Structure formats: C-alpha cells, structure tokens
Image 1: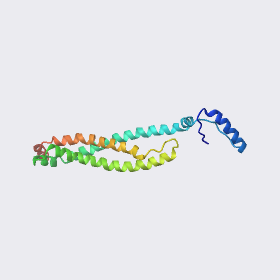
Image 2: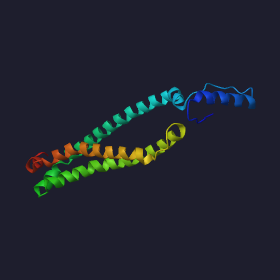
Image 3: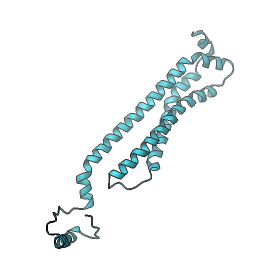
Image 4: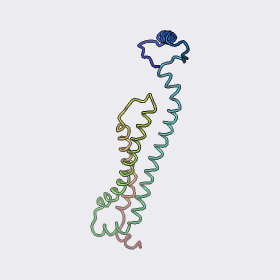
Length: 176
C-alpha cells in the first residue's frame, strides 16, 4: 500500500496500522518505509543490471565503429583500381571522399534503424516492469543514441575515405 504524506511518515504509519487492524485483524503488515528507501532496497539489482547494460552498450558502440571501419577499409582496398581510374578520369578528391563516406554512413543508417526499432520495443517492456521509472518518451532515449551512432559512423568511415583520396591513379593501375 502506498500512502502520500506531506511530513514525516511515522505518525501516518501508526494511524494506517490502526485502520488496517480495524478492517482486518489478521492482515499481515510489513515494515513502513519511504518510497526512496524501497527503491534503494529493491532497486539495487536493477541498477546493477542497468550499469551492466550501459557497459555492453558502449562496447557495442565501439564494436560497431570498428566494424564500419573494417568494412569501409576492405571496400576501399578492393576498389583501389576503380578509385584510381575515377581519379585518373578527373574525379575530385572530395567526390571520392563523399562516395566512400556514403557507403559507411549507409551501413550505419541501416543498423541504427533496426537497432532503434528494437530499442523502442525493449524500452516499453522495461518501463512497464520497473515501477519507479517515469514515463519518458522513448524517442528521448533512442534519439541521442542514433545521433551518437551517426557520429561514430562518420568517424569510422573517415580514415578509409581519406586514404582513398590519396590513391595515385598510376599506382592503382599498376597494382594488378
């Protein structure tokens, strides 16, 4: 039973116990505590799990960045000849940079879209199960994560894209 009081809850708890005893003398009454004390007592396992989930989320973000970097680097390495031909035919380095970045950002957009949908579903379940969490719109939680992922994707694809702009057309044509 929850009871909202303006002052110290001890006098209200005594009155509540008297009323409960008059209604049902066999009703077992537990200890009286504030909502914050109950949160401390029963919420500690959830806070540990949330900390663990945050650690996993940061690790996943780093792995996603490494994956985007690896895929973009491999794509640049496999397309060295094509990029060299483009540059020999007059492509500007910024066009090559934009072309390579677009591929890395496309990967991140697809992954972020799928991840955001899954996160929205998981957030709804968590909010329904954990009673002390206020109902905050899920977009407030998912939106910043999507922006951070977009930043990580650009940062991860930037190094291979810059490397692609420095490909010498003559070297690229002789490579194979």
